[in-house]
Amino acid sequence: MTPQRVAARLRHILGAIAAIENLTEGMTLADYGANPNRAAAVEHYLERLSEASRHLPATL
Image (cartoon, rainbow, N blue to C red; front, side, top):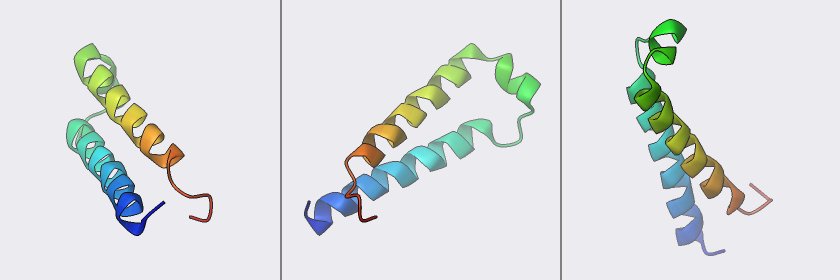
């Protein structure tokens, strides 16, 4: 994998983490659980993060 592709995957991971933080900032677990749309959005970003991580070289 080229360094550019690795960098792109890492940017995807960081973007997903930032989005999750933005969606959950200042929320309690009860607040989070009361909003199924927000939970679905967080799940979507976790899936993106997971998929991007699967494409990183094992050496990382």
